[in-house]
Amino acid sequence: MGFDKTALVTGGAGFIGSNLCRRLVGEGKRVVCLDNMISGREENIADLVAYPNFSFLKADVADASAFNSIEKVGHIYNLACPASPPFYQADPIATMKTSVFGAINVLELARRTNARVLLTSTSEIYGDPLEHPQRENYRGNVNPIGVRACYDEGKRAAETLFFDYHRMYGVEIRVVRVFNTYGPGMRVDDGRVMTNFISQALAGENVTIYGDGTQTRSFCFVEDMLDALVSMMECEGFTGPVNLGNPEELTMLELAEKVIALTGSSSKVVFCDLPSDDPARRKPDISLAKEMLGWQPHVSVDEGIMKTAEFLRR
Ligand code: UDP
Image 1 (tube, rainbow, N blue to C red):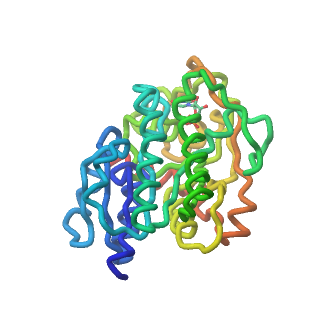
Image 2: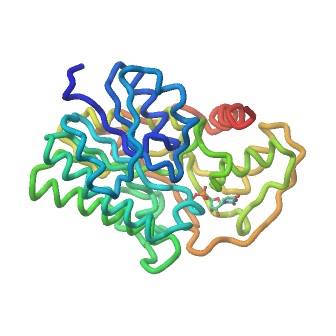
Image 3: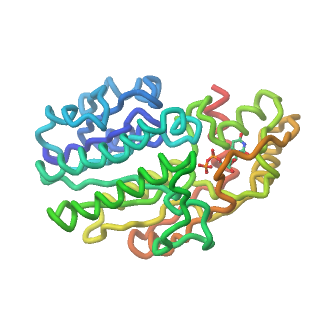
């Protein structure tokens, strides 16, 4: 692989980012990992820094000057943004800046270096969806002034910027909408449902269901997600947007019971307040990903939970 195929991974010390860096480094690619460590962690990339084809740049994707030192890059994976509700809501203005300024900065870099650039957008752009399952042509039901808007609207604006740079300057873009993803590399204190439930079950603590537990999500194991991200980056002539996720839908009550059973835990479920604007249902229609990328997830939720529990136990 030539120098011009260097991959830049923004958010490369985060959960999906660090797993992606590991995959790309293993394939012999040169990888530059950029992260400001707001939600990324040094432990996630500790094993990677020893590789000569890996380098780490501590910088903020929203800061244009962070990219001045980058002269050549082939692929830009733009993952940088806190993605767990408690994390992205902690400083909502920073979250919006990360999505919007971050998008502009990676798009300008792509324009300058002729790189291909992939945006990890999100199922959150569908808001609390009125169509089920969600297909890419559904335009969503987002509350623009709610507590989730900093993330949802930030990612929607990022998608807009990607398509405008594509139309105005011919930048080669790839836009994917990532649905709930989990696996090794998540923070124990991440606050999302998978890490909460598994760590509570392992500790024998109460498993905290928000609301009545009838809301649904569909969970994709991280290794499946990496296959999709790499396929999307490498495919020709397809910008997306494309949904990436596992269509197996579960209520949070079903998930809690599954996690308790699989970990052999004695934990009980408790019901807590439902956060505002919490989407009632979410499940991707992945027909487009199947057709265009030949991709579909292979890891079952049971297997993924066991692997994640093994990681969190450590
Ligand atoms: N949730 C829950 N208990 C928890 C954490 C989350 O019941 O300890 C619920 C949350 O209200 C939501 C779903 O699980 O309905 C998924 O939440 P998460 O924060 O993982 O991601 P989201 O899909 O909402 O962005």
